[in-house]
Amino acid sequence: MSPPLPKLPPTSPSVPYPELRPQLNTGDLFFLHGTSDAGVLIEQLEELAGWPPYSHIGMVVKDGDNLYLWDAPGGGNCFPDPYAATDPDNRIHIKGGNPVHTGCRVSVLDDVLAYYVTKIDVDGFWVRQLTSGISEDRFWALRRFINRVDGLPFPSGPGSEQYQAVTGLGSNFLAGQDRASVFFGTYFCAQLIADAYMHMGLLEMEVFPPNGYSPAAFAMNDPERLRLVPPAQLGEVVFADWGDGPKGGGTPCDQ
Image (cartoon, helix red, strand yellow):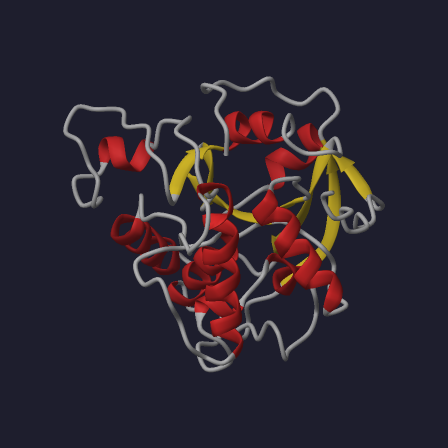
């Protein structure tokens, strides 16, 4: 019998996603409550520690008028990556192509959220905005980081194929609590966001390595778990009610 899902975080205060969307900017964070084996493991570990249980985290990238999501979904082969398609400095760039790939990815925000909302058991997402914003230099530091790690895989540990993502994620996160790392060249979701924040100069590097973070760390105001570099500042967590949000595009897939 599968273990029960942890208790959902609050869905109040809330704002309709179409109302929130125009306010989104680079560095803003989206949290999900999912039902995959790896997601349930993350939430159970967080709940045991007394943290808010979130199974996945991704980060908004606002590039001109475009809104993207930067995340490490642990599978999937669904959405075209605009940077891999257009930036010759991207490690998986295919000239003239519009690559769809697994691993760390950039995807159109509305498209991937419209897909994710079909895979979660609540009609919306939790959002925490980077109220301090970022400079142009930090934006380009993020772009360089994305180009270096785009497409790198999710950690895969021992066991049956069904549980390799669970054991890989769990082993790497627990190593991070001891300031160590395993499964080099891989990323789970919160590890990717922590490393992105570090590369932008928003997150201290001395507290934990990137693999020492879970999604919950980015939802709490705990300097022992999340020590931002002044003047970086995150606002309060709000629930984005999807409701009649965009239908999105992309090909359905398992992830």
